[in-house]
Amino acid sequence: MLNVSGLACSRGERRLFADVGFSLAAGEWLHVQGENGSGKTSLMRLLVGLSPADAGTVSWRDGATPSVEFRRDLIYLGHHAAVKEDLTPLENLRLAAALDGIELDERAALAALIRLGLRGREELPVRVLSAGQKRRVLLARLLTRPAVLWVLDEAFNALDVAAVKLLGDLIAEHLAGGGMAVLTSHQPLPVPGGKALVL
Amino acid sequence: MNAFFATVRRDLLLAMRRKSEVLTAVFFFVIVTSLFPLGIGPEPVLLKKIAPGILWVAALLATLLGLPRLFAADHVDGTLEQMALSPSPLGLLVAGKILAHWLLCGLPLVLLAPVLGLQFDLDASALGILTLALLLGTPLLSLIGAIGAALTLGVRGGGVLLALLILPLYIPALIFGAGAVEAHIAGLEVGGHLSLLAAMLVLAAFFAPWATTAALRIALE
Image 1 (tube, helix red, strand yellow):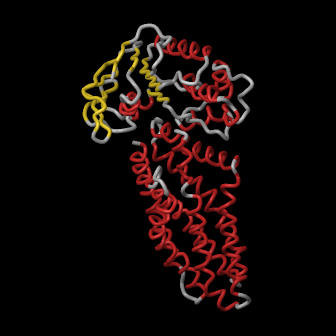
Image 2: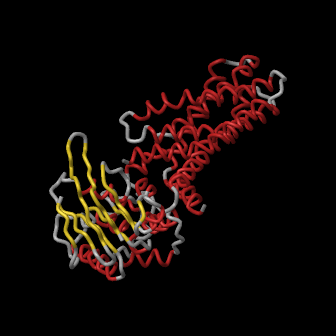
């Protein structure tokens, strides 16, 4: 369903990578590896369509990207917190869904936050939460937004042992349900199977 | 359209949690327009003559104060990226943000203008025209300003650059907005001025969100 071929990217004079290609079918995931500065994040941004590639194509369900259909099927979580510090986790989650055009009722949002271990924190402003808890607020979006392709850039950062396992479980469930994932990480990931791509 | 109203609601909610940022612009408007009558003294004829220009220039600068923050916070914390990747059209979300900016920074100026105009000895009908001109003009300022805010996003010293970029574009709004009140005081017809303001508003409402979206996509690359 996801077909990537001949992707190339350079920053200024420096060529980061060239001729990167892979394809993912339902239930498969890709582990993008590489040293610091090898272009993992750049690859992720090209993949989701935030920045244009020097060469190459990304196609989704046999259609060119970026398209509305692709964005509907996609969740991208990058390095940024992407949560509003002044709002509570509950408000953050519900407003993020509303911006995507999805009506998310309070019960579903609460259930997602509880699954991510934020019980009792849902009415506090995000500002007072720890870095790992902020990360969990963001990850709760994986549960509330129906998407087929998860693109997670260093999603395991700042998470404690329990949360790493939880995220691994979430990804495994997602794959078992016919989803796909592209992940970057320096650690071995607690998700079985998976293709590897070394930049 | 739900995403549009959700964006407006979100930005209003965020502003309510951080009231000082909104109140700065409003207080700036009140203080600046109050300084002139105090500095010039009780000279009704002169005050009446300069009133439209001063109120409009103050409104313009007050709008400019809030503009650098329009997209900056969302850019820094990554929510802008999420908006760009949302299934909802980015243009719609941007339009929602611009409307929220006007509700927070423009509408209070419109509502305050009749009160502040009293300091300049404007009569009731002139105050009415002033309010109407600002009602048409301030959304125009927000719309044009959003393009500048998007273009200068992430640029160091962007605030100054924004002013240099946007203030010249505000000149037509200033001329026709202040001109409407001046014409009314001189006993002339104001329909032409207001129609031109309205025409510019319609044009900007159509093109500005689109231009802003294009600039934001470049800033995100």
